Image (cartoon, rainbow, N blue to C red; front, side, top):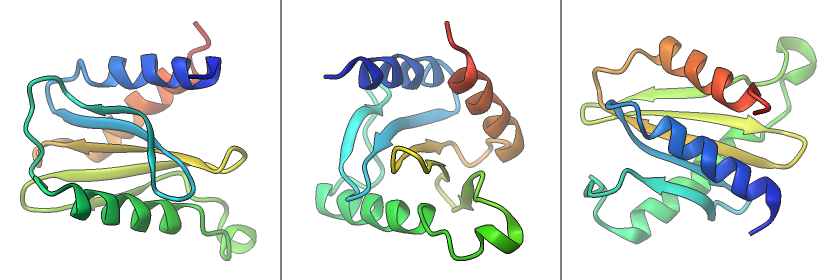
Length: 124
């Protein structure tokens, strides 16, 4: 694992300390999980690796789209609130990867986004 991926893994683990966060992982441009994952001892709702992989591919493609960047600015994050979970993705456009978070449905998306920015901009 590269030094950058080790750093991302550490930051994902910091996010997983939050009781509402179920999953924090870095996904590459092809939708493959490269580091991070589910909170230890947690059973994913998806249960089916094929469906999870398809979802990762969809989020990856949606998050790196740039056709409205010039008029609206770049995507800061994409969020979806579902009955069983909140899903938030944060694109890292330069490296073509993204951070994907899955949290409990009670999670406040704005608070979650603020926490992610704090952790991922902290250089320590």
